[in-house]
Length: 169
Image (cartoon, rainbow, N blue to C red; front, side):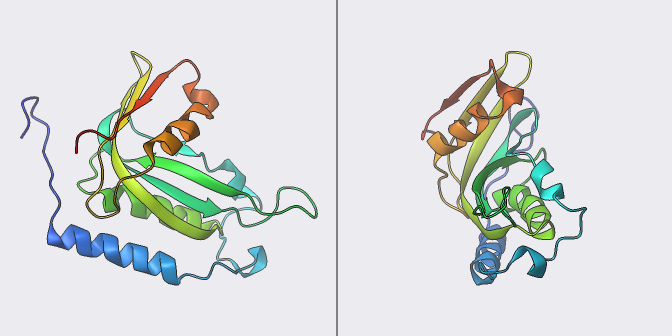
């Protein structure tokens, strides 16, 4: 336990194996599926409602995920490639933060899903600050500058002080 009675998690061989299996599954998934071939189970265009930022208040492990939308937004348009910043309260390992969100993307027909890396993210809703730092043993270090850009683009975080650093675990 840490000084504030929060559990301290470290990586394990089991976690690294689970992260490797998830990366392998994603690398073997078809990136050439069309929207009609996807496993989308939600209402049409429900994928548009998936936020690019899904972070829990407090300090948690996070992952940066990239994926291509299942269909163009405009007729004769191209599918947009998006980035997602995801943390999950209580995630013991980065894989625990990534997998539920990856499953959500898959269920909504997203293609070419990749976990770009991870780290830690601290969201303080009271002081309106977000701090991004560290790395993931299982997925490597995320591009924290990219993660900051994703958060800065989300209207829910307008007025927040978003910082990043490659320091720390």
